[in-house]
Image (cartoon, rainbow, N blue to C red):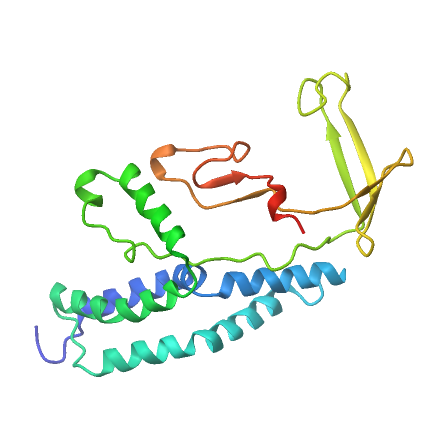
Length: 236
């Protein structure tokens, strides 16, 4: 290789990093959490598509950069403190070790020891013993997502009854769809036959991607990765 020839390894690493950038932003920063909060606020205001999605994502990206700037500065200082070489696999491994410490410290701020222990025990069950033997709790650091608010996006809701399904399997011989009016300020639902009920909204399906070995799975039953949780303890 001549002195003027491009660094093929460096170019490949750069292209690979650019391809992984969206995944890193979503899984290792607060971008997703900020974006979800922005969309919840828009739905609570009832403005439909104003402001547009692109603008909300742009605001979420700006706020993510602002929040993550100390981490980026720490990574830059650590990398620039030594000559940057991308000629061999050892050079790449050394850079990975350099940036690993600040990233782990950043993500550990948003996780609990019990959560890390859960993933550690799950790894021991799912991974082969040879692969999970040396795993420590700080090797599996995940971003904690806190549900800060659960608000009604619309002033109506519906309930579907199907034969032989649900809590009233024998009471509805034909599929029945019931619409109810919702009062978000008083948190009361008005059923069409005159009954009022208190509202305590909560999320239904939440979770993470299952292991590839599971194949395609339904979200109806809850599993280790989540699913149709339907837990009233997370109600508003």
